[in-house]
Length: 139
Image (cartoon, rainbow, N blue to C red; front, top):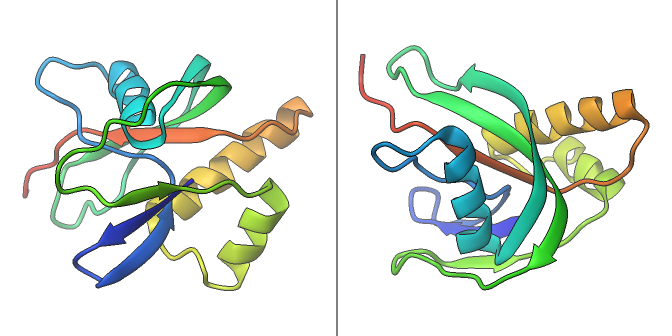
């Protein structure tokens, strides 16, 4: 997970890695790029968990959520305006933080719950996540 400063709320938020797709970029390639840029990791496997509209009342942005597995260390490459620290928690601790309101980013909560459901259905305990989104435009 990332501990990222968000100017709009004036504080650091616990989030999963995320980013906006570049022109012509596929959702999967965006997920790969953002995982490496923000977290400094590469994954051997990506599983698409879900696609959602997070704020359809005023934006047509579609979010693609992936579970990243088989992580190996690479190099973090943050954008100039990004303030991000990488943090690791076991899944049960992340679920506790969601329940206690420590994690408040809606997309992160949705993504973690989707990953947990997928992992439980598979019977696996590994948990590494990333997501990406298409740049939305007002509707």
